[in-house]
Length: 307
Image (tube, rainbow, N blue to C red; front, side, top):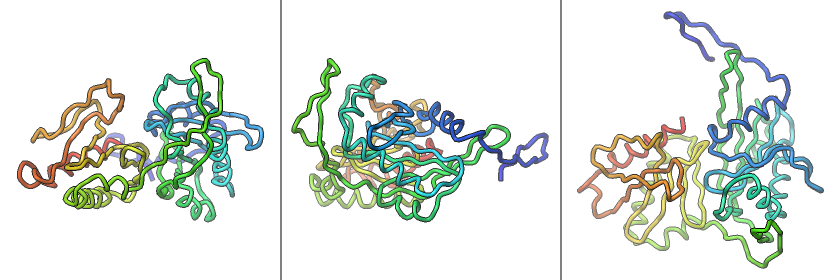
């Protein structure tokens, strides 16, 4: 329940319904960057075999995103969204063409880590059970009479499986041509750790455990280059190096309480958005120059920017 406090008195704020599914759809689409750091690409995209896709986007890590909306609860919502994800996997060139036409993005799209996001008030048991296998995010919402919107995860998605599919190249002239290039696969945690010393591997395991202890809402996923932690948005990006861990932290307006000056500002030219503070964890410096508490205080601040 939500209460509005006026002059020391509490008044319950009741929920209300959207007029229709389209009203919910349009509200979330207009606020994708604020809610999830997802850039809107297109809605109501019609395909030949997979139906009409409600919303296509691309997140701050250049992962393709499909979003499916239901005003209340509808059986099979996740299966429907997964059908749209299959369309991206089978038609990466067409998706990339939509992205290049609508957004100024030059970096490579991470087709190995696509995302499914569903919005509804409730989900049936089949969708809840299927979500971890598909790496899907099920988000519940409540809309209040004071025009407040509450969103929360129904169930945390698991790590996406690596998938192989055909690749296409999009030329600057916007012509699409088939190539034999294979999409780069996301590395597993073990593959990321292979480059590091045993000491750094143990350091990562300790760090990873401490991060997950912060909240059950935290999800971890991997790319070809990094390990990322997120709630609705990425708040921490970790790269395993041979002798240390490199960590990028999310901040609000580049503000962070860092009394030991462990972090440095990441130049905007790097293109890492709100992941704008960098810190290195060297096992030789731990418990000498700084402690785990010092490191985790920075991580907690970064995590809280997603709340």
